[in-house]
Length: 208
Image 1: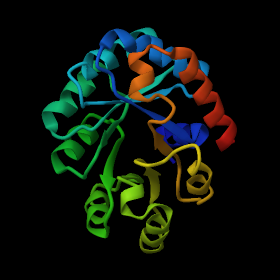
Image 2: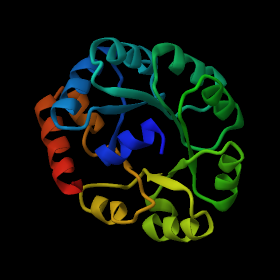
Image 3: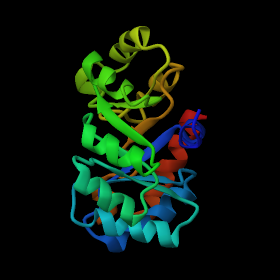
């Protein structure tokens, strides 16, 4: 198991973050860490993503920060140059895989079919994101895929929440879940760091 995977297996929840304002990056990262989840997948859905990663990397060394929703090589390079410690994409991408792996950065591609997983395995990737989890059958689909690909670990994301997280994590091939519920966009925009910390603590209690 890689160092990154070990970290995921310890935390059990990887907060998935959308930041419209890079000024919120450090307070958010500190709120996550205070709640027991010192990790952030900063999604490249906004123009603030790269700068947010840069600030978290510089000011919150205790937080493992990576980039999500990385669609192409250009975004991957921007994320790496900003200091991303891991790369996540919503679908498998050869160019993102080559860029991340070529720079020694863990890559977790989005998958939902055997074809997606077969493409990922061409790069000897030890884990994949299962996305969007709820829309593609959730845990039952993961179990079916795991029967065919027994050596692979999954990080389900999309529709995972406080009500179903234990069900996902009870399966031994689910290393971690990706979750937005601990740091929703509304809470970030309201700068409600106290509530984000509380939700992170609640998530830790549910998953440990």
